[in-house]
Length: 144
Image 1: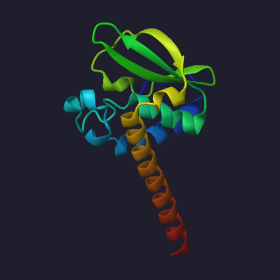
Image 2: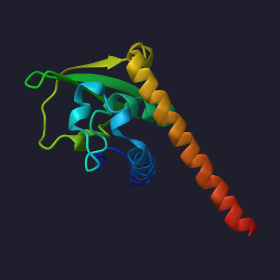
Image 3: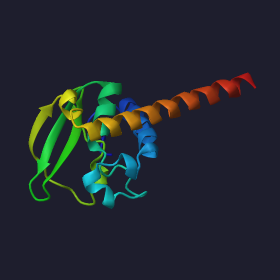
């Protein structure tokens, strides 16, 4: 996650904390099917850029951008939040990749793909359950 020097430190910490929760949920099952055979536990963001961009937009607003890699013929998604580029899943690539044809894309267009929509809803639901469970555990610890 390359977030340094793009937004305030407090915001970075909040986003990194949120992304850590998402990272823990990402799986081969929620990975983009075309690249799922390359997914592994050491690179859990692999094939998740579209749904993570959607989740970041849910929580922090901003815009989603799509770019292309002409060499590997893949599409990549990232966010612009408060005017700053946040490429939350850039760590999925072993080496820096140069993307071209960056263009703003609306979430409805991304969610037209039924597979992406299903994967997004699955991770979003698991994230909600994870956060809700943690909050309940915190409340219980105060009660005890």
